[in-house]
Amino acid sequence: MSGSSLFVLGGARSGKSRYAQARAEAGAKDIGGSPVFVATAQAFDDEMHSRIARHRADRDARWRTVEAPRDLPAAIDALNGNGAVVLVDCLTLWLSNLLLADADLARAGTELCAAIDRFEGRLILVSNEVGWGIVPDNALARRFRDEAGRLNQAVAAAAGEVVLVAAGLPLVLKTNG
Image (tube, rainbow, N blue to C red; front, side):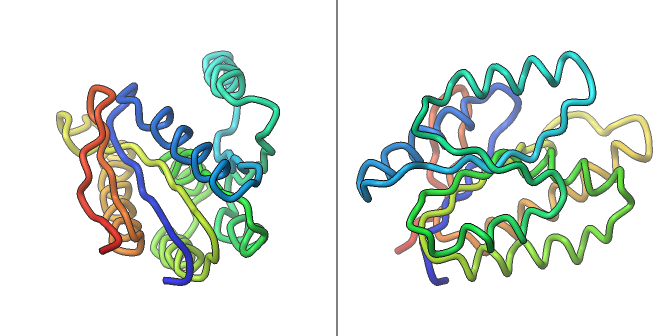
């Protein structure tokens, strides 16, 4: 691993994005740079427009935003070595975009992990833990749950540090050392 990567996961409204943002801002302050937010969301409805607006309001003017709803590995590669702290939020929205586009999810996950490994700098990735609930009642939702679990496992293996956030509290699952 060339740089320093942190993988933050947790359930919906667990505080994972807030935790990841705080870590990115602290990291940017340490290196005297500005953080970069890589957004994977696409606003297809009013609810998503509101969520995106709320997340934007949480970030101040230091932040630069790059949108990467599908080609996340290329976006990470484009930011490689530029000295910024990069925060990707979130992998499950990216996975949803790929699933709906009928993309090769295994290949996409492999390419993402390769981009994580190549990244020189501080990279923070956020994802939802979706496997702790009831079994979804339809095939698409079950496929999404299974693919998200596989992706989270692969990213956790590639990342130097992994933190699970529950009820706003971080639990370190893996450290660099």
